[in-house]
Length: 76
Image (cartoon, rainbow, N blue to C red; front, side, top):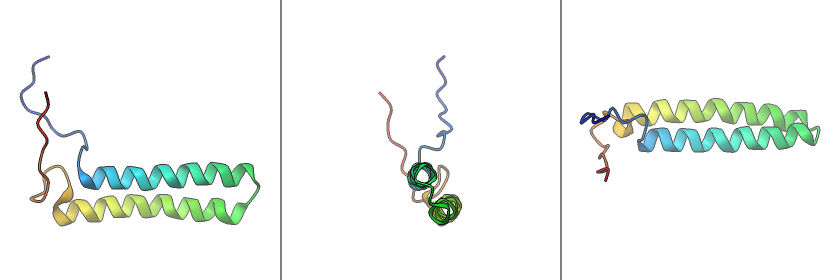
């Protein structure tokens, strides 16, 4: 497949930050669930939503795939 147009597939600072926050939230929520700490499970769920919001805000600020502050990296 020799496609010269790369749509980005979310490979942007906004996507990386959002996914990192959400992975931490999901991992912490799983650990807190195992440890039977429901308040911290819900706090992790809130952090998961916060990760989504951070990704949307960063994208609107120009750090998304088509944003003016995003610089695509060359693929070898």
